[in-house]
Image: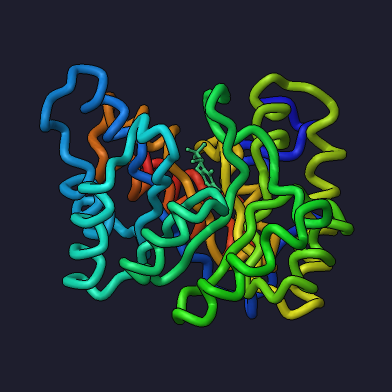
Length: 282
Ligand code: PXP
């Protein structure tokens, strides 16, 4: 890998090295794309709830699922099943959702551990950017307040932009999830902008934590980028989906998740994964 670009399974940046006191790092596995495969044939398999259960056995601390307005992958019945499973296993369900009245009603009916508000456009292939919290304060404020009043932890999926972080804090969100997609893509494409994206993520995570927000990261993380992301000490949770479901085709879901966990844990412990760790993970 290109050592000039921050990232890579062996490319943890020394400036972002975690201290031995670094917070533990949770892994949320996003199982949306199990439903994408199921829906491609209109069949009842593969079952996202079965994948969620397996993911938790493999080391996921919680499950993340995005119920989109167009139901392109996760369905309402999936959310029923995932909420029941999360309760049974005593693990958190993180419901990604647009801030619409329909989704708010679904969240209030299920009361997941957390709701992550994301921007949503019907024509997008995946969540393209962060939520414009600063520009949508009046629209988001009642949704955030209603979810919080129901005991749901509110997370806002935003870019690592100081104005958005400050707006999320002002809105009373408990969590911000920083969009790491542009960074991860720049690393994969070996573009030098990766360094600038990474600097913004580090500074954004530090700012958010200094305001008392819990800080998560998500979008586009793979084995190559997870170590550098996990080495940012303020991150408390990474939400990872598409890459893991794709990797499961080759190795199975359990080994794919276990390997991701090992890489995360090694980076968080302040060490680039040793050859031994990498062998164990492979
Ligand atoms: N976090 C958020 C807020 C997302 O929208 C997504 C994609 O659904 C993810 C994490 C997971 O991203 P990926 O599937 O690229 O790992």
